[in-house]
Length: 168
Length: 323
Image (tube, rainbow over the protein chains, first blue to last red):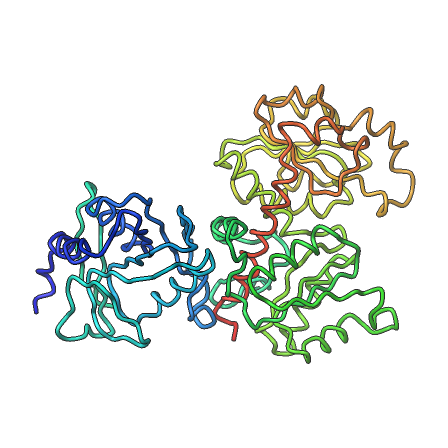
């Protein structure tokens, strides 16, 4: 498929419609830095949720710290709602190995015991290395993206979302 | 010559002194410390970064605050911490510093946090580790003699940035016993590296090093003149235990001339902050009304010290030379 034609705005709408029947106003969103945070803000508005969305930077929970070290300039993780007993949806732009999701789940549990955790992503690029699957996903690539390529969500000056394919 | 604190990738291998570290590394430590400050508000006040690492606190000289905050920082990063009580250790039985280090290396140490009354002791350990091919073990200087106390200097910089945002428009005064102060040396290096345009050093001639101007500071022997218009007042502790000879009149006379009182502080900018590395001698270098006053940020310094030490330890343990 033609990767250049991916329409992030259209995928975002698809994701909102997939999620709408399953969320209540009390459902809490947590976006993973950086693309997931933009996406969570979008979903939060579109779904009319009452809890303010949280954000997670998984730098301190990554499993490759021992080999790659600390990411420069980690962001602050902000969870503005009570995690204990909450229905939480982790939001990320692109799902790949699943390691970031695992780190985010681990970090979330250090804030309390949620009643339920789900995963919503814009794109599943394939290449999973852990038993993790999204509950909602706007697009699953028919063929896994090669390891030397990455998909990145970007936000324009007026907040419009675009997807860019990067060759490493 | 390669800076002994940096590895071949230019990353921090040991933290021994602020002298000679590039601004980029200082800023990276402060930026990394920021998200660590929020860990204390969590249900689980721990991060898994240093899980399975062994950190040895080697304190050959007394310390409460520094040792405790290093220990809390290491534990919040999930490291295993061993505190060596040196007065009851083999050193008292005559073991040399490097023999102690070799023995702890044999116990699979990953990091040493070292305080020593002799200037240069942490350098000696770092050199020894390099010479014996143990580059995967890191050394943090927690204060050596009169030389350096880099994590104190860094937590002071974090505190200043927290309250003043920008270093490049500040006038900062360091007041008191500069001669015996490793803290002052680290503060001066950090302030000038981070671009503070005016660093003042205020104290009696007997308590200032003779060549202090060479560090790029303005020297004042009159506290009132020196405090005029400053943004930050950094007090130093009068270090009676390091003095031999008659450098001082009585503590009462020192207080009268050099003690920071509300009346003297009024000469600084109205929004000036007052810092002190602790432990404070109330009624000697600082008046209680100032130490407990609205401009004092002495307790936030202690709290920020934990986050800054977490940042230093995780950056050391996470660099490419590590296992």
